Length: 107
Image 1 (tube, rainbow, N blue to C red):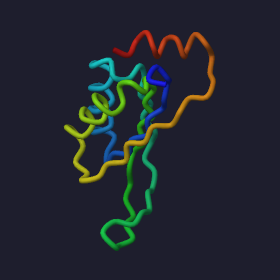
Image 2: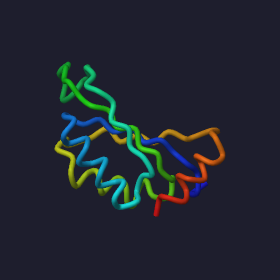
Image 3: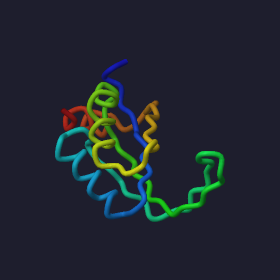
Image 4: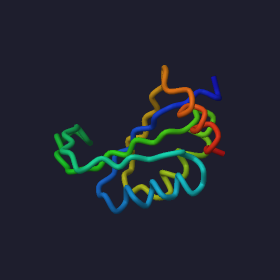
């Protein structure tokens, strides 16, 4: 369903970059709200090596119809990673007024 609400997870290397991406998404109405979670430690495999990095997690509330054609390109234009984490999770339920607000705010 294109009008479905989603939460998008995006990891970034710094709070400063997280703020820049969050502001861009909200200003362009690609997200109704973006939460910036404090630094966390990420352990992952990249190009055959185990990596450990401090990262910041963005939680973006938006609509599915904006995800592939608009939100992903906006994030990739600002993101330094070759393959950034940009994952969409479906919102199964929520406060009706909040769900409606996401739809009203996002372009």
